[in-house]
Amino acid sequence: MSSPTPSTSAPDDADPGSGSGRWRRLGLIGAAIVAVVAVVAGIVAVSGGGDQAGRPAAAGTPIVEDNYSDVVVSTEWLAANLDDPSIRVIEVSTEPGVYERGHIPGAWNYNWTTDFVSTVNRDVVSREDFTALTRRSGIDPDTTVVLYGDKENWFAAWGAWVFNLYGHENVKLLDGGRVKWEAEGRTLDVGAPQPGQGSWEAGEADPNLRAFLPDVVEVARAAESGAETDTALVDIRGAAEFNGEIFAPEGFQETAVRAGHIPGAVNVTWSEAVADDGTFLPVDELRALYAEQGIDGSKPIVAYCRIGERASHTWFVLSQILGYDVQLYDGSWTEYGNTVGVPVVNNAGTVWGVA
Image (cartoon, rainbow, N blue to C red; front, side):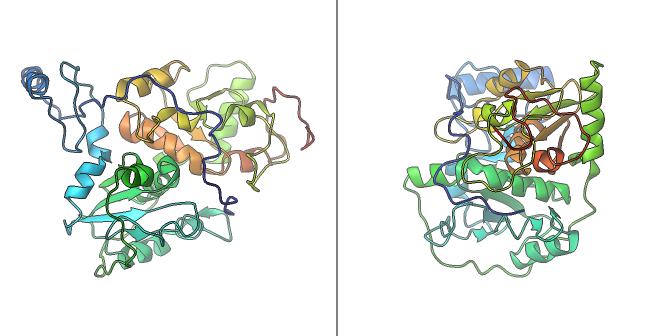
């Protein structure tokens, strides 16, 4: 996978995130019985307190059963826990040199173009190489890994997917990422971290988290024939990519000879899941956003984009926050759109790379 041309904005800025409310909902507090839930709800309503991730709770707001507090932490929470040796902070940004200009104190730098991928055979980083990388950055089996980055955590979410793919059990994203941390005037450091050698070993890749071309083609052929499909497809690219008006956002070189989308896919741009400050929308708004397109967790979901990374952000929202059964199709449109004989929907009428 090759790197996008450096840009100061995400490629889907033409499709900004939406949502009127910006309150955070109280996350899942175990499999509590109804009486305990009622007590906790009463306490929140009276005190206006937050959850373990540092999210403020709106008084009188119903408790939503989600995984938010298990997988997302606030800037306040991270700032208060930077000295905890059981936490390892990792930055995954796309803009060259941004980490070197200053990063969250103690944060390790992972390069998405080399650390998360096998650069020659266009695949995910091998189990052996990922083990070596994480051990160099001091990660043990019980380490809490907190990832953050630029562009609303777009590539930090890719890192979270890789960690989950190889079985690390405690992986979180920093809500709002680097932009929110900087906007709040929080401390940045230029020094390189010096962690001790870690002991975590990557496991076998979890097949439940990854979809491959044959899986997607099977769904596409069923959708093309008008049959009911057992899997929902979510294309998270911008509307212009989805409709075939463009082959890739300006400045991004990885493309396909055909434009359009996979039959049966619905279009929910990844950036719609975040607020203006880069934080995730409240859980009820996230559920409603995807439910409007028929994505409600009632059947397995496959998310895809152009080269796999943007879709990891949607994978994180749907699977890690909302708890749906989701696979990432990391081959995405550059694989599918270059494959001979597969069905394609092209609303714009572009043919073989000619608009």
